[in-house]
Amino acid sequence: MNPLNPQLVMYEVQQKQIQAVAERLHQDSRARTILLIDKNGQLVAAAGDSAALDTTSLSSLVAGNVAATGGIAQLLREDEFTAQFHEGKGMSIHMSLVGRRIILVVLFDKNTTQGLVRLRVKKAQDELVPIFEELAKLATTQPSSPFGTEITDQDIDNLFND
Amino acid sequence: MSFINYSSREINCKLVYYGPGLCGKTTNLQYIYNKTRPEAKGKMISLATETERTLFFDFLPLSLGEIRGFKTRFHLYTVPGQVFYDASRKLILKGVDGVCFVADSQDARYDANIESLENLRINLQEQGYDLDKLPYVMQYNKRDLPNAMSIEELSAALNPTRVPEFEAVAPTGQGVFDTLKALAKQVLAELRKGT
Image (cartoon, chains in turn purple, yellow):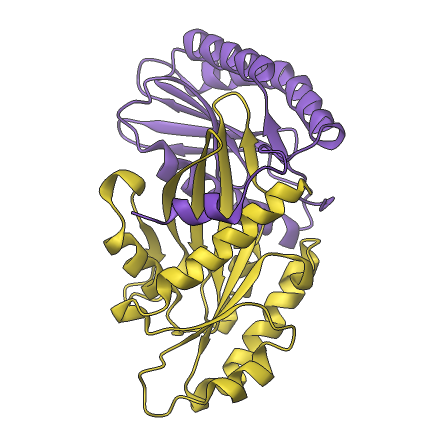
């Protein structure tokens, strides 16, 4: 396993805990949408108004943005910029890091303020960090092959037959 | 690294197309995008300059179907090929599960291929990866051009470890899906090992 890029796994127990934190943050911050995104660009959880959003594209772009910001931090010999904020006319976006692996994204409009969002994000981060630490531990102790050794070349070939 | 979600029964993998400037990485993705069923693909995103040179990355999400009850999703990325975008290129390699090196077959691009391949190896090392241990395929693109080098020459120079290699003409799609399929296969086989 690559120590710099450990495997991310998600189990039902932790998914429910994360979802609960995201839902609570959505309520408490009066934001439109909450997204939790892996630094590699995979969506981990969403709460609030996400059905109309292209969350796959958003996840990839947010991860790219955070990666670029991390690159800038390195050049400036700064450990990391842990949060960033983009202000729009209608919508604004607040992105912050949870631990070293996850990005917490809050999309909000005039219904709330940046101050309230930041305050509630801080609380959610404190709750999320131990959950992702637990997941990181599980990833190293449990076998990470999801299909056992049963998968055949034929299974893989079938994916491309259409 | 891949993201395995046992809760929603999904596997997400990241594949990166690497290679020198103008070798056809974006064209590979465009062909895949055009030929994939609408329900199996997401939006293709290109962060490019006004002259359509890749500035940061192209992104194409594909859902290929299920293996043993797990939905498999592949996120395809290209890097900017131009030499001076190296800082951005490194970022795209973070969390990569498999690499396709797209070589430009034209003899005039021989040095650019070599340089890009060395750059790939170094940038992977910085992220803690060893190219020889990653799922990895080689594509010789632009086979239709008159100044294309022979496969033997290209293979000897670019593929000493004999990873699966494919001839391609990306705009017409020749070799494009064969390349993708071979890479996806290696990535899934790696997951099977549970590494």
